[in-house]
Amino acid sequence: MSQILPFTEANSKRVASLFRRALRTAYDHSMKFEAYRNTTIAVRQQFEANKHISDPTELEIAIKKTEEKLAEWKHPDPYIPPSRPGGTKFERNIPVKGKVIEEDW
Amino acid sequence: MYRSFLRSAALVRPSIKLSQQSIRFYVTQPITKDEVITRAFDALKTVATLQESKISLESSFQKDLGLDSLDTVEALVALEEEFDLEIPDKIADEIKTVGEAVNYIYEEEQKL
Image (cartoon, rainbow over all chains, first blue to last red):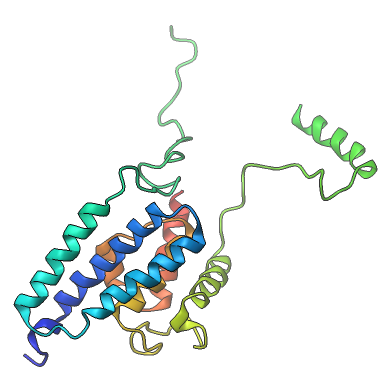
C-alpha cells in the first residue's frame, strides 16, 4: 500500500460523491443562480475544513455527519433536467413503433 | 398551410421591426460536436480554478490542469449546468479528461 489509509481512491470517490450531492441539493434550494454560487462556495469551505482528517474513524464520523446533513436538507421536489428521465419533457414525443392499422377495423 | 403562413409573415415583416417579429421554430438542429466542445470549454472557464489554465480535449483534470478531486466535481457540475443533464456518480468517477466528458455529453445529447 503506497498511500496512507484514509486518502485512498475509494475514499476520495465517496467524498466526491458527497460533494456532488451537496452541490445538487444547494442547486435545488436556491432560486437564484447567484445565491447558488455563494452556497457552493460555503459548501466547498465546509469540505475544505475537513481536508486534514487522516484518522479513519474520524473520517467515518465526518462522512456520517455529512450524510445526516444531506438527509436534513434533502429537497422534497428536486430539480430534474426536463429532457432526462423523470423530467417534464422526457419521452414526450416518442416515435410510434410498429405499423398503424388503418383499414382493418 | 404553415408555408403560406410563413410566406405571409415574410411579406408583413419588412414593415415591422425585424428583431421583435421573429418566428420561433420549436425544432432545432441536432447539436454538433464542435458546438459541444466550444460550449464545454466556455463552461469550464467559469470554474474558479480553471480560469487561467489552457484547456484542450486531451488535458486530464487532475494531471494536466492540476485540480483536486473536489475541483473536478465542480468542473463536471459546471458542465452539467451548461448542458442541463445529470452525470451519474459511476460515470463521473470514470471521466478523467476533458475529451471524455465532451464525448459523454455528446452521446447523451444524441439520445434526446
